[in-house]
Length: 363
Image 1 (cartoon, rainbow, N blue to C red):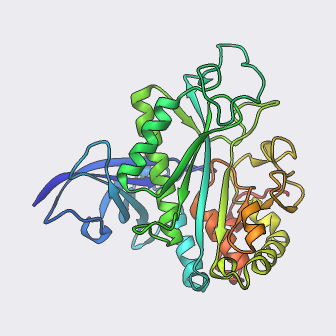
Image 2 (cartoon, rainbow, N blue to C red):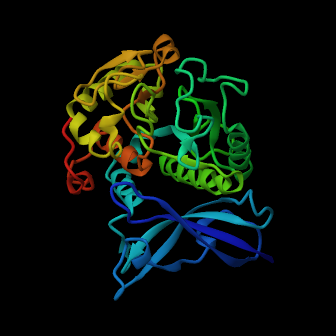
């Protein structure tokens, strides 16, 4: 028998940007397993997470993805959960929206996803490495830089990357970004032997990676900020570029043709996508700082100023994936994946209901 801790992690009801919550319980297992079915459902006080009222406060956590807990060590687990109320998915449960899109036919397209999660480390109210009440030297030397005059927060970044690897999270790599104190970690299907290519798993792992970053930040005295434009002015914003491929785009016989067809569909649904691509994304998508304006849509080969970028390697070999550069740092990956698949897989728009309930964003 294994007696250990399971950290149950979920997304709260905060609007327009949900935040992660978690609580810890002792669990007894016959043997080590990462099967969510082996972990019991658990109730929590939804009135304290903006998911219920005090007179009917119980919400249910249903485990959906389990990895090793690299902080507590052997015999302990991190458990990603969906939130339910009265035997149905809670309205804040956007993973259920992605499941609906997959069940409506998108699963037949065998989509893979990868997320380039940018974020800004803060020390108190100041970006890491920035002088108090002043600005650092202009952008230029910080991207993928090295040295104390170019880098801030690497200790946390490296600890986080190792923790993700130890946990079994599908981390692909990390790098320093364009603004001082800004970093990126990448999560998604890597094609490795034990990777899960299910797009739900990529989204689960992004949230688990975010949770680990917040949790380890407690030990380093640093806070991970996911605002789309944390510092106003001539500084880069933070995105969560989303890489998508399908069976057709990965096929050497149909690849580029399928990618161009997907881009044409995405252009027609630009406004619908922007609605779920992050709060205050208009502050980031200005047409400057490696973005396309929120008011237009364009695609290009190797173009980081486009809405959709076809990577050089993909264009050269004629198949692979495309990058949607519009999603902001604070996205919910379940929503973004569901919206993209609804569009490129020709899923009935009535299946995707979440965007219709969110505040209108003019693109």
